Image (cartoon, rainbow, N blue to C red; front, side, top):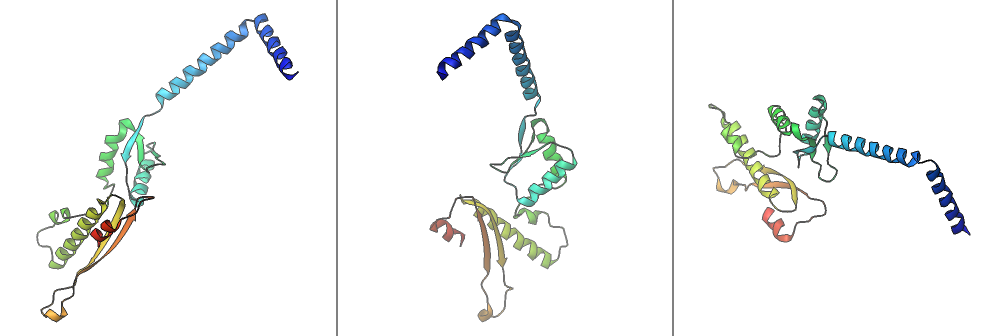
Length: 192
């Protein structure tokens, strides 16, 4: 009985449409206008491209802050954490942010020694050398597959004239892994 009632209602509705032929025309016209408006809005929406990816939280926050100050629309990818901006502004923004020293990046390596000034003290030279070693070790560890980031601190004892008092250098290593990944024994022994 429900099926016949539904059929009766459908027939009544079709009869009303036949009695007033303007209704289907109005519905079709409205649908066409809605589709056109949607296409225009979609075409005007900016095409977003990746500005930077694989950033530290500090660099990401600083870049987002700068983009907000510059009134640049941006979005952060949920999946990768990449910062995306309109495609036509990517190169300009990279240059402007680089001018402000962003992103600061992770570890510095031996390029730190290229920037040394003439007349630098021996202590500063030694500190820069140690920082360069730490940075290079961090970069090397970060090339291991599951490693997202690494931080290395070296403890380098001062040389002694006495053989018995010689201490060997040591290192502290902190490794951040990609989600759901683990290091195997070979990778761990390579780090140690």
